[in-house]
Every structure is written in structure tokens, then in C-alpha cells.
Length: 340
Image 1 (cartoon, helix red, strand yellow):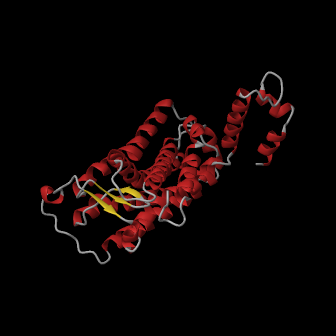
Image 2 (cartoon, rainbow, N blue to C red):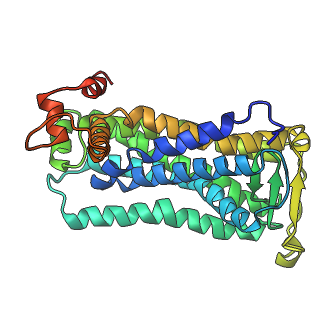
């Protein structure tokens, strides 16, 4: 494979690494019922995985070799562009509820209602977004050499309300919640530890890491969404909306674009690079905040000793098997875990 991108295979390596880093802490977030955080990991991981696969398939060509895959991957990438900020909104809402709560007990029904609300936002809103995008989708998809499949948006006034403004609106909603979190935290800082201890599913360390993740994502979502709108508007004459039939005329066509063409166009180049690199940045950011937490390292050690136990290696003897060896007879691998 002779790719036209001189940095190849740098992007697919980072993309697949981003996928692994996104799903690595997933199990203990599921156990803690952190639905918003889980949605963030899943959307980010899917976006990294799909863009990484696309960059391999179309590294040296712009041919329509996998049309069904393109139909699926375009929807996943498009959904993730709103699913990631929507998941951040869920995180901000949950942190605000925890900070502002006046009750000391949380029932199972309360937890289920919170999960249903998060699913409605992190999954339902992106699905609605995908449905509305069909209104301003002029043809099936485009294929860009090096990048792969991409959804298409018809530049009309309706597109800015049905497509471009959604991430900015979600980001602004998260910003409101984050502002309320900081205000409430300042007012009730003396009660803060008591509130968290009564919650039972989140400790101060995890709370602050989630808040930092939400704040960083908000600081990126609104500027990136605004910049995308600016780039899309700059030097572009909006097409008039005539009718559904006019917009979707010859809808099944696929436009094939060589790398030398899209790389020479600032608008297209910027849009594609933002679309494929932002999820990777989100994945590395998330892992930096949560991948080295106490809960995560415990999960890694359990997984490590489970695998090595199946291979016949045991860190020690006793009731706890390989895990007890971690306490009683530390091995070289245990010391690595401690240092890590």
C-alpha cells in the first residue's frame, strides 16, 4: 500500500490507540452507573475506530469499494460529532445534581431515572440529529482519499439550524451547568465531602476529574463548533431551499475526491482534520484523567493476573490465588504496578 499521505500510518495508529484508551476504563464506570461517562467513552471509541478503519481502506485510493460500510460509518461519525458533547452535557447535569442535592440518600429508582435521562440526551438527541440531517443531505456520501467516507450537507440556511448549530447549542447548555456547578460548589463547599460520601457512587477525586473533563470539553466544543460555522460560511453563497425533491435529486450518487484536491481547499481540509482528530484528542484526554485512577489500576491488575493465571503463572499462593500473591509475595510485575 503506497499512501499519498507522507505521515501514514501515523493517524490509524493514533486512532486505534484512542479506541483502546477509550474503552479501557469502561467496565468500572459501568459498575458505578456513570451513564454519561460511559456514553462519552463509547461515542469517542466508535469515532476513533471508524475513522481509523477508513484511513486504512482509503489510504491510497478514492474508490467506492465498501458502499454499505460507508453508509454505516458516515452515520457513526456524524452521530459522534454530537454524541460526544451531548455526553458531556450528561456529565455536567449529573455533577450539578450531586452538588446541589439536599437529600442524603439516592434510591435505585433515582439512579434509573438518571440513566434514562442520560440515554435520552446522549443517544436520543444524536439520533434525532441524524434524522434531521437527512433533510439537508444532498447525496449519499463523499469519499476522500486518505480520509474515507464522509457525510454531505447542502449549504442552505436550513443546514445551520438542522446541523451546524447543534454542537454549539449543546456546548452552551453544558457551560450553563458548569457555571452552576462552580457557583453551588462555592456556596456549599463545607458540605461538599458529606454530599459525596452520601452519594455512594462517586468520590471527591472522581468528581473533580469529571468536572475537569466537562470544563475542557466545553472550552473546546463551543469554539470548534463556532469555527466550523465560520469556515462553512466564509466565501460561500448559501443555496436557496427549493424543495425536498430538488435537494435530494440523484441522491444515490457518490462523489470521489483525490487527496490533492481536498488538501488544496482550506475549508474541506480544515473540516476533515477537525472531524477525525478531535475524537482522538478526547480519547487521550479522558485516559489522562481516568486511566491512572485507583479504580482503573485495580482493574488492570485484576485483568493482568487473570490472564497470567490462565497462562499458568501465579504471583503467589493462598486463598486469593494470583491476586493474593500481589500482597504476600510481590513479583516484578507487582512492582511495576506499584510504580505505575
